[in-house]
Length: 120
Image (cartoon, rainbow, N blue to C red; front, top):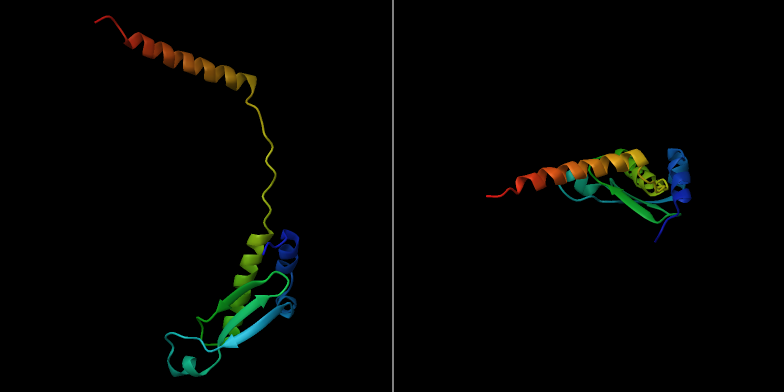
């Protein structure tokens, strides 16, 4: 799904609370190391930004609050990348002086190479 840069830029500029209101928040039991606390609590967080469809998750911390903050940071980074619009490139021509210098340099190189081929 293609996301318009304007939508992503608007969402990236929102406060944390406003951005969370636009997201669907899912909490689940994270896997991996962390012991009994991690295996029994729903501390992993998955955020789905509804207007853009972007999904990010965080499960590296033992606290749901810290994971929510990490997921929000990841969502902001993704939104900023989507909001970037490359500047339009304008084609340019080499100046007359640079063309003259380039041709003179080529002539010098050509003369140098021609002088190498001597009569043996």
